[in-house]
Image 1 (cartoon, rainbow, N blue to C red):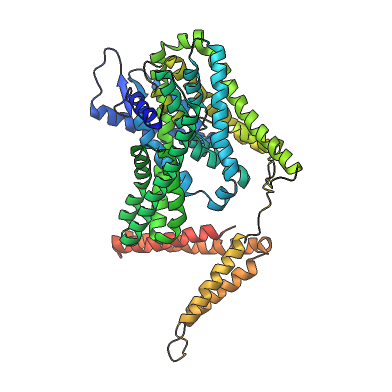
Image 2 (cartoon, rainbow, N blue to C red):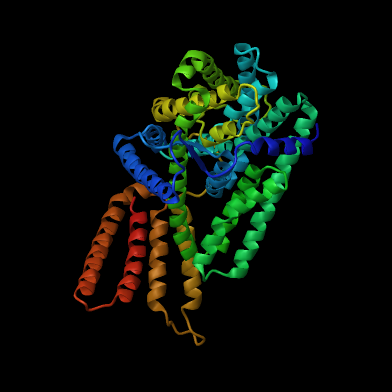
Length: 560
């Protein structure tokens, strides 16, 4: 079977579930009015804000609260049964979340640990798919091998959204963070490709491993090319647009993730890899093509958008619980006929990740003992943390829902996929922070010498001083910008003195900026008083308030 045939079969399989993001149906209930749908969205948004507040107060990962809250909403009397549309869910949520992760990925660390990232994103996913497929066939011998491996491909890749939601609340060494973040960016592509070929094999009864491997390389390399091309074109367009209209540039930049993903899918390569590549390229160039105003406003807008996207993902996954249970015949059917096989599959999936991580670390240790390679093994504690960080999420559910209706064992796969999401997010998501603290990991990785933040600031301030000094005199040699020269010379001297003796200056710096913040607060209060008294208009208020806000942000960032 060639790659084109597999792609065609994938498209056929994906067409079994189409339509809106949320499909709703309930016996004896008329279709929801559009206003009712909008009201439901508002209820979900209110639930997101409430659950986030509760999670913050209780110290839980918000993803856990969202998932539980969505599941509770699914069983509220009067609400219709809802399920995610898998095709729209993937194209709506996955690109921006992948782009956000890739955009902020540290490039040097990513390149340094690329081998480890690929080991997890490709090797661990394939290994887990094989293990889960074998265990599933052992548990249910009547299920075809291809269907068993399709289930393995569905639940094998940890989810980028789930990983981000948990990792944002814990502190890990740089190597560990890079391995987990890099894995979450790329492993969906591996899982989706394996799923495509497994479904195609189940529907046709034929499978060719060499052709599947060649097809994977085509999809991966093609995704890199498409993503780089889309990002390169975007950079060129932004340079042509200039930096004046920040609204236009921010809006255009937000479209890049969907442009890369859809371009990759339309050209029959990996849309996931295309999006990640575009994010890496765009993140590299954003420092030189964006103005300061674009970065400030764009970052604020993007952070809020990503927060809402992540929250809606988990709420929608929870809401889908009722629909999944309805499709398979109810909770009683699940408990009576599927509970033990699903539990065994979850254990097999978890064990497979532990085996792969510890096995790969053992190989690194043996190679290092033999004098081959320079990579430092993770060690027992770090490998345990890495093995336990395997939360699944929306991609697993969306791919499961896209299974053809005629797929053997489809109901069992839906239940297994949902169980994997619930267990990994609720159990691993809530305990990962505790395990990290108990492991006591330290960032002792040896890197080439790099400047500290204070040393880098001293270099920047000295460059600014030299630039001001060169422009501080007129053509006749008269000093015309004495205050600017004095200010930048003072900043450069202070930064140089601070570099290397940060601890001894901490109290003085904090005291200094506390005075600055007090002055800012007094200025803000006076500005508001003038506006309330009618002495200044709204435009003056906004202009001066913007300057005070920027000054306050800078002062807060300088405190240590």
